[in-house]
Length: 140
Length: 173
View 1 (cartoon, rainbow over the protein chains, first blue to last red):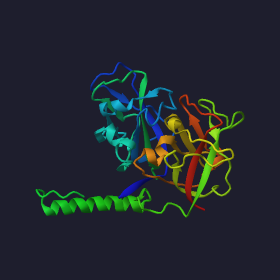
View 2: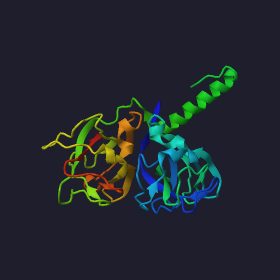
View 3: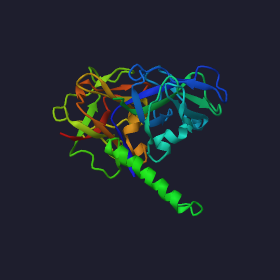
View 4: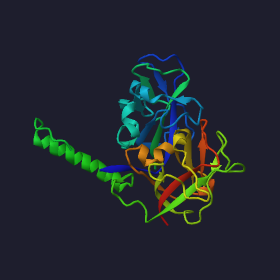
């Protein structure tokens, strides 16, 4: 069984900036290190407040672990094509999946076109953020 | 791989071949490795020893830098682990200190290379195998400069000079 090797990683954040409602989408914030369409993503890990209390970028609280099932992840490329469509955030939280990391085959992810979508509201609030760590390599 | 008796054998085989090919390519590219893979020729126990005052005093949202380590300088870091109390009840310093496991969710580790580029930014909880199904976090990071690398806490933590973070770096010199 294979484990992912981190060669480069950074955090990305989608802020819940309105009153949470089902089917509401929130895009990821720009990340200066990786927002020039210059990365290929091969792994992703999601974090609830149990693993990471708050975002170091915005200082907003991470979502509670109980609300992880209320989040779906869509990864798009620069052309707006969905490469990963509504993946449950649950799948990406290592501590909920025996420590395994979700891997991809070199996704040319465009961070600011990609988004999370609420499938329910639970205890989500417009003061919280959904945080992921992406494992990536630079495009040659 | 689960075999589905209702699925034609040819499709099962095709699926197994494709999955094997995917991981074969990822392994060849150095992006995955078997869980049993030997990560690093050596390992080194590195602590971030919090102090009451000075550069290693805990302050919310302050970057607290790791110490220079000549052995790790320029080494290839193949895996990183942050120990929890399930693995090591106290950190063997003088005096002994406690690993602040309850605060791991409040902190991040950032590793920087000698060109001042951030290679890795990850929550401390992601490095503690006892919080992740006992899975070690594999890395392949080159030219890491520990003296430019740091831990920061983004939420209030009850950390004091009674605490230290016990990292283990698995590396090739």
